[in-house]
Amino acid sequence: TYNDWLPQNDLESIGILTANFEDPSKARGKDVPFLPTCKAIVEDFALYLKTTFPSATVTIRNSDSLETAVTRMVYAKHSWCNPSTFCLYPTLATTGQAYLVKSPGLYPFVEEIRNATNVHVLDRPFLNMFNIVSQNMGAADII
Image (cartoon, rainbow, N blue to C red; front, side):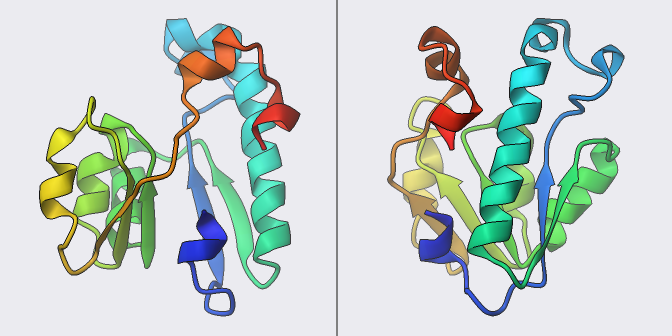
């Protein structure tokens, strides 16, 4: 999906914004048991992006403040939001291109803004946490 939408030669940097998986005291209680899996998935995803976009510097950003994370999404050239309430509004407010994964259950109004000049709605299936956990998937299965 990413290499279908992003310019191959125009990327200088890619930032992966994610919750802190290094420090359990900074994670939500219900997320703590999954921190090692989350870390492995994010690190494998970063490796995939480095391989797919070799000219870009890929950085995992898991210790940004809320304000910094939102600012990064708003001012990114390409802002991606998988089904999540955290990234939805900053992605819609981006000064660049916004990419939202279609999620009728979480934000049904996305279809109405599909044709906005900078909003792209991806109709591809999204692998959610419920499926990852219920199918006991590891990082290699996901990536």
